[in-house]
Each structure stands twice: as C-alpha cells, then as structure tokens.
Amino acid sequence: MANDITSDILIIGTGIAGAIAGAKLAEKGLKVAFLESGKRIDRFDAVEKFWNAKIKVPESPYPNDPTAPHPVTHRIEDYYQQMGPENFKSTYIKVVGGTTWHWLGTTLRNVPADFKLKSLYGHAVDWPFDYDLLEPFYLAAEQEIGVAGDSSEDLGSPRSGDFPMPMIPVTYLDKQIGKALEGTKFQLRATPQGRNSTYHADRPECCGNASCIPICPIQAKYDATVHVRQAEAAGAIVHDQTTATRLNLGQDGKIASVDFRRADGSTGTATGKVVVVAAHGIETPRLLLNSAQDGAASGIANSSDQVGRNLMDHPSKLSWAETPEPVWPFRGPLSTSGIENLRDGDFRKDHAAFRIEVANDGHAWPTGAPLSTAADLAAQGLRGAELDAAIKDATSRQIRISSLVEQSPDPENRVTLDPDKKDANGMPLPRIHYSYSDYTRAGLDAAQQAHDEVFAAIGARNINHSPDIQGAGHIIGTVRMGSDAKSAVVDGNLRSFDHSNLFVLGSGTFPTSATANPSLTIAALSLRAVDAIAQSARQD
Image (cartoon, rainbow, N blue to C red; front, side):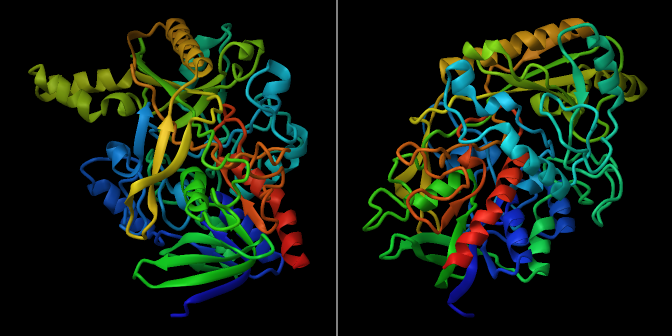
C-alpha cells in the first residue's frame, strides 16, 4: 500500500460538510482525496447490530474502534475528558458518511435575525454575512439533501423556491396537538426533513420505521454516503480507516502536508493544493491543536487563540405528560412537527430563543417506554388481557416535547488536549471545559414555562420536566468564522485567516448557535465554500 496520497483537494472527514463539498469539487474536474478515520458501514449489518444491542443509544449500531474512537452517550466521560462545571453531552461517530447516519433528519434554516444577534439584541456576535447571502445556498442544500417540506410555510425564513418534495405527512398526534393549540401563541407546523416523502434520488420513501435515530434501515433518510458516492463517481478517492494526525506547515505559511495513520498501524503523508478540515466540532480543533509546531506555536490556524473556544450545543429542556384522549404515538418518523414561531423576538435581549420539537416517540427518551410502561404495569400485578388493555391505554396517551435552546458563545467553553491520555493513534484525547450562561439558563426556564402552557392547552396530566439539561447532539463552535482575523479562525468563505490553502467546514464555524438543527446550515455553507476552494486549488 502506498504511503503517500496526493490530490488537488485533500478533505479530512466524510460527513455532510466534507462529502457535499467533495462531490461538487470532484464534479468540477478536480482531483479529490478523503481521509476518514472510520470504516464503511453495511446498513443491514448496522441495523442487525442495533436490534441486538442491549443498550440502545444513538451510537449502538456503529463501530467504536481503538483507531477511530468516539464518545458514547451512556459512557460520555470515557472519551471526553470533562473538566466541568457541566458535562458536554452531545456525541458523534466516526464512519464513512459521518454522524448523518444517526441524525434525526430535521432540516430547518436559521431565521434572518440569527445572523445579527449583536446588532439586533446586543448579545454575542454577528455572522460575517446575512441571511440573504446564504438563502440561495439554503435552497441548493435542500435540493442536494432532498428535503420534504411544506413550501407554503417559510417558518420565519423567507424562501426563493420550493422544497424538492412535498412534506412528510403529519401524524394523528400532530393533528390533535395542533387542534388543541389553535388560538394560542403556539403555532404547530410540519417540520422540513431530509427524508423522502416520495421515491427520490434512487432512494425509497419513508415508511415509518421510527428508528431515524440511530439508523434508517432503508435509507429513506438522507445521510452523507449519498454525496460520498457522488464524489467517488466523479473520481474522488476515499481512504477509510485513515486518521489525519497532524497538519504540517510549509515555509510559505501554507499547509504543506498531512500526516496520517491507518488502522493497521502504517503511516504516511498526504498532500493537496488545498486542505479542507471537515472533522466536526470536537475533532477539528483537536487536530489543529495537535499540529502545534514552529510557525504555529499554539496550533494550526490559531493566531487568534480561538481554536477550540466557544463550544456550543442546543441545551434541551425535556418534558413529558399524558393527554386526556389517545393520540397514538410511536408512528412515523420520531418528529414530524414543531413550534417554530418563538425562535425570534425582542425577548432575545434578555434570554435565549428556542424551538419546540413535538415528538412521536411517546415517553421513549425520558423513561424507556414502551418497555418501561409494560414493566411498570406488570409490577402493579396486571396480567393477561387486563395488562394488554392497560399498556394500550397508557402508551396511546404519551406525549413528549423538548425545546432546543440557543447557547451563548463563551470563550471559556472550550476543547483542549488532555496532557496525559492518548488514543491508539497517539493523539491526545479531547479535554472539555463547559458551562451555561445566565442568558442560556433563562432560555431554558422560559422553555419549561412554554411547555407548561402547551400542556395546559391540551389538558395534559402527569406532567414531568427532566431536572437535567439534555444535549441535542449538535456540536457547534470551536473554529468560529468572522470578519476579523484577531477574533476568528476562518473568514466568511471558511478559509483560514492564517493559511491561505486551508479551509475548515462544519458547524464548528458557526459564530452563534441559533435554534435550528445545524445540518442544513452546514450543507449551505459547504456549498458556498466550493467556488473559493476550487479557485484556490487552480491558482496553485
């Protein structure tokens, strides 16, 4: 096996950010090579692994190899070296196609005000461009992913075109909750989703397997292997089980090469006219910081001292209750509707915004239902037909809602390198310092109050709020973009201020978290960066 890899464009990571950019660059005739720590996944095997897993968490269908290690939800401190005061709870996986394998599929746009939080509300920072500049790329990203949505509803984000597919049908639960909320301030609307509502792009329509997290067994839900395949069809080469361990500087200040280590222990060097790091919000700063050397004493792309800083998620308030009449959850995708009309307003001067997700999975997340429901009722002595009727009654009235809350960027919320612990590739494990600002905590409190109002409107009983702040699975910040090299890692085109042939893609570049699930914005930003990356490669 050759120990050297050469290309026009070298992309580290095959998740949604790297795969979409790589496909478009390969289609332009550029020579593209990917380095990916993880393996290629066989969908059937992964589904089988999930079915057989005794502990079913988002990571359970996927490998967690010593040379491609990742955090696991129920053992979060094995990989993250948590320094407090709060635990960072969101995870990712390392496989070809990245974490889109186990994403929910929600494809919301940011709202215009999300790009101007400082200008409008005196909080956090502005993005280096506004919504109007990104809108055409949002539209293009929806086409690339294949988003099903209601084109007549812009959900606060003005649209210049339609979704490629009609919306996923809302569930009976959605309809009943929506009816109960009519006349209140809460407007329940269908959620745009990266899953097929009709046969599309050689993939089948959603048939409601309800295991979107952690795996769609039929690939009705988009994942980034779609664009990996497109990239390969256009000539790109994917080097799986190959971990980038260090970026090396040339005398001209550009990235001259990338060291890598394969799962079999062999090592080598990869080169590209342009290097693109698309390794998500924890691994990207980990790699950049691990590349400290002469000319980049505090790490690659880190003259601003912002690499690893401003780590964010969408801290989530989780609530559950029982409806007075059956709403029949446990059907369809895990969520098909949400309350999106509270994502902006003057209140953002005082507390964080949030969006409310209405779920179709009953009490599965907070209690482990329906298995826990059956166990509880059996423990009460119910048996036979009586037990069957009680299970049906209890599960038919379960409702769960959760609010994804905007998190303040805070330079002290950061990823650094653990001084002692290393993985099998010899790379230090990520050390995380993490907490929530008063602004974010006030948003969580407002979310709980909103949940109580929603439950009151539908006449719910047995209301519960989790005392814990949940993670949303959204890893945001750590390599922020901006217009000033002193306070940001990359510019609006996602090019490093420090190294002209280095681009950084993914949600790590977001200056603020907003309230939308980040995948569509990741895709839009990657599409926008393609021309700048191609131009940079052709100038060399």
